[in-house]
Image 1 (cartoon, rainbow, N blue to C red):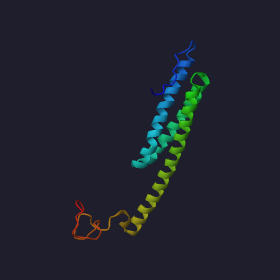
Image 2: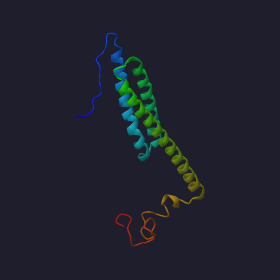
Image 3: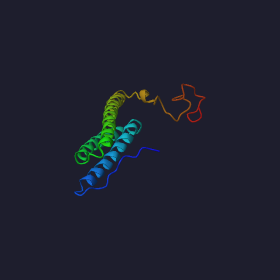
Length: 148
């Protein structure tokens, strides 16, 4: 049977209900951060996904801190979620650095290609649609770009 966290009912003053809502929000934000991190490495708009992952992890930590103030019943679950949020924040920060480095490297390559006119670093040695030049076919004019 899967683990089910203890979810208390709202107390007399409503603080338990508010803590539960903050805890549920933090769980959603942790999931969003955990999804944004790997997606940022694969998708073209990686920096934006990394920034979103960092923001979601920070917001989850803030939400967990506010729910910890009002609920003692969720203390163990809050500690576990806090550790996961910190891990997500660290991974999101690393992916943000990786994405920024890749943008800087790619931008320098692009500027160099525009200045020199040599686009061979991008695999554009010649007309990619002209099979007689052998461009992008390993120098073999008999191979086609589509079928190898």
